[in-house]
Length: 477
Ligand code: GOI
Image (cartoon, rainbow, N blue to C red; front, side, top):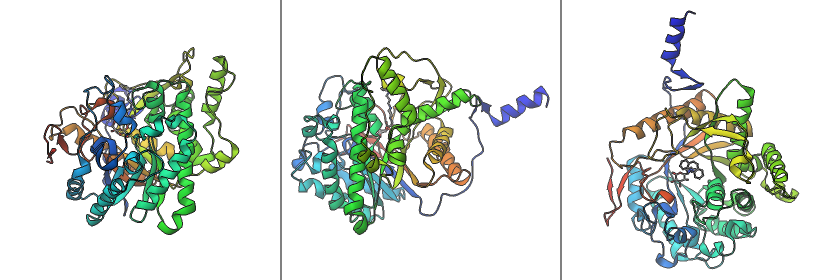
């Protein structure tokens, strides 16, 4: 091959540093029965924050504190879905969606987190579910999308090991009240974010800063709580209701900077273990943390002069309960990083340096309205393959979130079209060419909503919402 044809070949196939920017689209169809949906979360859309007996959640409290939310806003009204859920369902129907993933607000149905059930709150979700049923849309319930009852936070929240009991009791109410009509349950949404941002960086509720220790404790209790809810369903509900219970984990894909260099391949795997395996290894495999986390964090803790590891250990009974505690794998996927092995400064204990891996996002990648969200369609296929290889490929994977933000909210959103087109084609390739078992796909989100610390500035909606209008004017084009 001479130089000219080599350059031509590289140019025509768009190969660059291992990731491919231009690829032929695969023209094929998704499997029969594949679920197509949009996803939302209670605090981000419902509003009605204190209506009909709802108790306060940690986000009601967190948003009141000056400086926590970039535009000073909150989810007090949000999309007003507490009153406008019928309009939400009509939008889904008009899009021919076959499923809807929404979350239940724990403090709406159990205002103090444990104890008395608020029937008005339960009724709201029953109304929503029956509206979905009439529209032929399959509901998928997330039990926890970050809005812990404040009453439980006052007792330590996710840092109190009793949270596993509290969560099991809450799950019993959810399964008993909604389980006749709902056959898909997701225990926790992105527990990693509760651990890292809620208890590590303090950028999300409850706003704690303990990235070297509290982060790992919160994660530990979340894994215990998840498994308790899963085992409860198996023991008391599975036989009569026949539903499925899983968990949704989020990860970026960690692309090795030098794909053929074994040290970079190992860095990529370590990145995936710290981001996905942290929860995935214990729950989908053997009830323990990934070996590389155990090794690194034990070693770093010792070097930092601590006499016990910052990474807690499960008891043998807990490990047995946690191992295999899922019917499916939920994946929230948005973007990727380039990773390489690098010396970390471990003078201060931190989750961010425990991995011993450095990462960055390439400056040439298209960007969304969120600074962290770069457009890397190839990453979703790689992540799906990594998960399939790592956990044996026996469980169905649901992509429970994938989506794109902009800052304008204009309906002629060319970049969003590009994003969905190419990510979906990579999912199709994973299914057809790599035999990955993907059973459904939920776009984030049905409509623009309260984007946590970014308030209403970042718009992820397939529908644009005018939050200044009292009747939530929706641009649906
Ligand atoms: C979902 O999480 C979520 O489930 C939905 O509720 C949500 O609406 C949807 O995504 C859309 O966001 C530059 C430490 C700026 C602190 C770089 C490290 C800010 C903060 C890189 C690393 C970004 C989607 C954190 C998954 C967490 C946002 C994962 C998307 C904040 C950053 C950071 C950065 C950092 N990610 N999350 N962040």
